[in-house]
Amino acid sequence: MRHLGALLFLLGGLGALADVCEVPEVDSKLVESLGQRLLPWMDWLSLEHLNPSIYVGLRLSSLQAGAREAFYLHILKLNYQQRLLGLAIDDDSSNNQAKPSMGQLALYLLALRANCEFVGGRKGDRLVSQLKRFLEDEKRAIGSNHKGHPRTSYYQYGLGILALCVHQKRLHDSVVGKLLYAVEHDQHLQQDRLSVDTVAMAGLAFTCLEQSNLNPNQRHRISQAISTVQQKILKAQTSEGHFGNVYSTPLALQLLMNSSMPGEKLGRACLKARAALLASMQDGAFKNVLIISQLLPVLNGKSYVDLISPDCKAPRVLLQPAVETPSQTQELISVMLKVPHALQPYRHRISVPAGASLEDVLKKAQELTGFTYETRNSLSGPYLTSVMGKEAGEREFWQLLQAPDTPLLEGIADYTPKDGQTIELRLVSW
Ligand code: B12
Image (cartoon, rainbow, N blue to C red):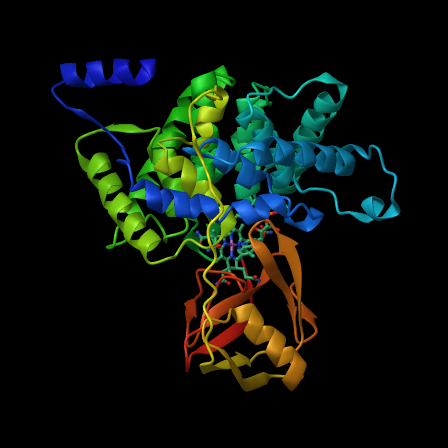
């Protein structure tokens, strides 16, 4: 805040008015209905549904879940410590649980900060060392000539740096340097397109480093990279107002809310984005809990950078569970499902009740027509890993498209196909 004030003063002196990104308050009923979607997930304590992002999103929002919240954090701690440190294993199944990825460990550390805890003690130090080691390994995978790729993604690389930063843990300049280089040289592209989520996450990490002054030798490069990120995000604004697409807009706004620029462009762009978000919220576009957890902080004027010193005493409204109104529909729709480039090409018309998800279509196709698929659970929901016996390899994925060529903006569990639509599954590199 002090920096912003100084900057405003300086720019004022130069005759240019500095502009900030604000997202004015949104109807509280609309915000609450988003928060209510998180509640069932907080009661659903099975391991594959535990999601530290939900906890972070709620703590940075204007809402709270009462006693559920503390209990949820407790379960997160037990689960993450057990899987990462191999502690207190009394049943065999826990031995087989996959270790959290670098990004998941990072989100867990953000969750601790969201409760105003600093990671510490012997166990905490080991978690910090693990995250640092993950980043070092990724740095090596990228290579000294920057020709390689991180094994996870630059998104997770940024998340890792951000998590250590909010815990005031120092990283070697060379680790930060890889993310700087990626932003400076457009290496965070996905299929030749800018991934707004990825640059926004990098920008959030840089903003934290700048505010905490953890890598003073790179100060100049870091602030340059922040403005590069801001420019890229502003340039990616669509005519409706979203940055990238509707689902990257929350993270983009988290980044821009920490920005200031001369002129009026920033403030105008943010107001337009807010209007677009509002329209999408009213349209029911926000179904996915991970995305909701990235959006709720924005609607409360907060970002992940606030985890440097979170306000854990701020009053928040207690969420009440939503009253379910089950929609009964007998109406059937028909969806064409095709996998043209498989070893065994597949094409069938599948009939499902209106409102069914794409996952329901895949299930039905598997039951009735010899279609086969597999999924893996992720924080965003079920991720399609294999189709017609063909598993996606390294840096490949099964892309979901509406024929002929429009990638879907949602995963199989959230997307609800319309009558007569053709859905294609296509193995692509990224
Ligand atoms: C990196 C990334 C990818 C990479 C993942 C591979 C990798 N090795 O990292 C690739 C390019 C393959 C990818 C693919 C897709 N993605 Co993507 N992806 C992301 C991104 C930028 C970061 C995810 C991440 O690392 N999270 C952090 C870690 C700690 O969480 P995690 O759960 O362990 O991460 C895994 C999952 O996120 C999974 N994953 C990635 N994307 C998606 C999408 C869905 C719907 C699911 C269920 C899982 C999933 O891959 C991660 C690595 O294993 C997010 C951005 C965001 N805001 O979250 C978008 C994002 C999650 N993806 C999105 C989409 C739509 C897709 C696709 C459905 C696109 C398509 N039309 O095919 C496909 C998934 C199809 C499938 N097979 O099920 C949307 C989801 C929106 C929503 N409503 O939920 C996001 C938010 C981007 C956006 N703004 O549009 N993605």
